View 1 (cartoon, one colour):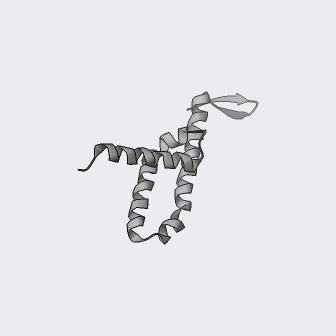
View 2: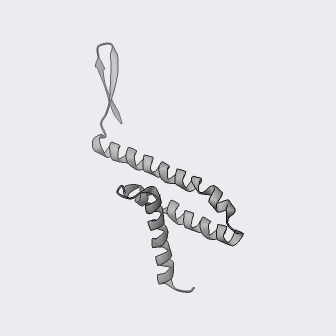
View 3: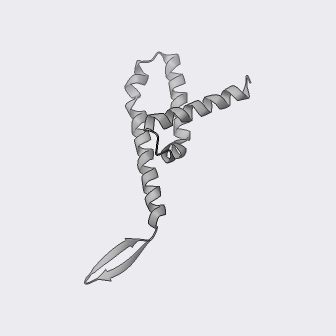
Length: 99
């Protein structure tokens, strides 16, 4: 949402979202970094045996599912936040026990 004010003959748009808008922008940028990091691991994934590729894909799915939380962890590197998301999901699977 923007408000428009006229300065001379030129309209000037000003953002009325303030700090919340900035926080959303930063979160989106961090989400893009996470997506890029996952993409950069594609060659590594391709070099894995087929069983390991399936496990790797599951771990990346866990990281993608928590991309919002990862993006908010601004003190962590992209890889650290992804690994933390994977560890959390693995812990949940351990706590559930065998099906």
